[in-house]
Amino acid sequence: MRYLIAGMECPVCGEEIALTTHTEQVQCASCHNQFSLRGRLCPNCGHYHNKNVSVCAQCDRPLKLRCPECGTYNWSGDELCQQCDAPIDLLTRLLKQTDTIERLHQQMTDSSRIKKQVTASANARMERMLAEERADREALQRCQLEQQEAERKMLRTIALIASVVLVIFIVYMLITL
Image (cartoon, rainbow, N blue to C red):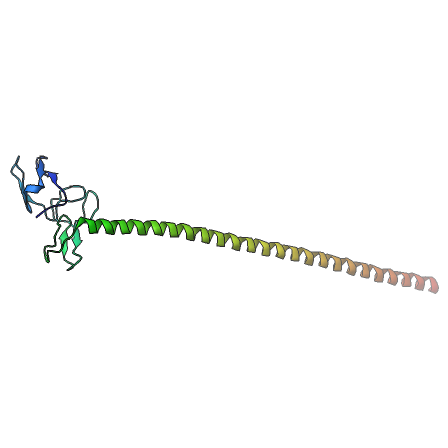
């Protein structure tokens, strides 16, 4: 079995262990400690986990990958599927990661474009609303001016009527005297 990483530190004594000469079981030449790599060694950062885990505690990368052929979960350090021997190659994973990066870049570009469109649309709506508000205020001012003019006319009419009644009253008083 071949691994994606070439070496690691012994989790017990810290001595460098070359993985090219080992299978799933590794023995440290210095302290003679034996341990398994499958599901415990992160191929991304080389961190060794004391338990079989799904995600690296050090770098948060997945330690189990699905085989693209049969769907079996394999340790991410394997190059071949344990079930069907299909290659779980690094190139395919890197291409998927590149596709993800390109997709994220496209989403960022799209979100920037959408943000500009939404901002332009919101600014246009705001301008329309401000124009409507100005028109409403102008209409209200016209109505107030018309109402004031109507009130002035009414006061003039009342004053004229009152003047006429007063003149009639004075004339009546002069005649009756």
